[in-house]
Structure formats: C-alpha cells, structure tokens
Image 1 (cartoon, rainbow, N blue to C red):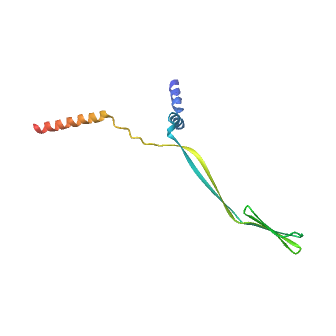
Image 2: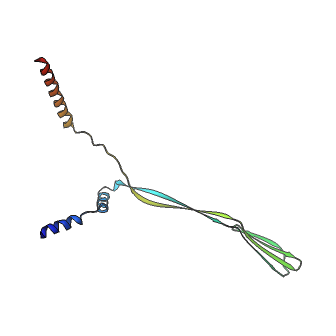
Image 3: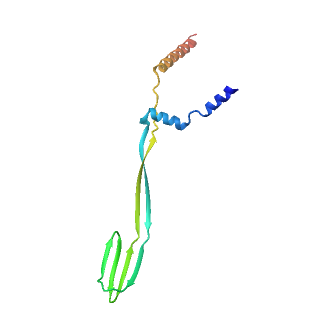
Length: 135
C-alpha cells in the first residue's frame, strides 16, 4: 500500500504541459519564431484657452511654440494675455516582440514495406479470385 501511494504521487507530479513544451523548444529551437504585436493608443486632448488682463507699458507680440499660441496684446493702459492650445490627437504606437510556437504539419512518408505488403495482398486476392472462377 505504501508503494501504491508513492507511485500515485509520482504520477500526480509528473511533467506538466509547460515543462514538456520547454523541453521540446530546448531540443528544437527552430520551432520558436519571433513575432511582433503592435499596440496603438490614441489620446485626444481638448482645446485649452486662458485669458488674463493686467496693466503695463510693453509692446504687443505673439509666440507660437509646440502647438501653443501666446498672444500678448497692449491696448492703451491694459495688457491682454491669451494662451490657446488647440485640440490635438496623440497617437502612440508600441511594438512588442514575442516568441510564438510554429505549428508545422509534417506528413510522414509511407514506408516501402507497406507498398510491398499491399502488393502481395493484392496479388493474393487476384489469384484467389481467378481460382474461384476456374473451378
């Protein structure tokens, strides 16, 4: 009974499919092939606009940098600052290389001895067929 439980426990913890696959890939690395997964994320930003007023004695100017427009406008004794960022779409493309198992269906060639046996069987049936009609 003791040996029965030992045998059952050994069979229960035998090779899992992951271990079998790892062993197969270790013996035949040509079965693994590199593949790439492409992930595309799209982010849409909304338009942002900010206006500010204060008093100063500077000239007017406009700055455009990185899709952001800053307008500094002097009107008499008031300065108006306007910051605008238009709506934008940001696309992030990420490629991840992964390994995948290549499944190839290999047809095994039929051994020559099978054709020889089939030939003898066919010859035997032809001879028995002819002998049955002769009698």
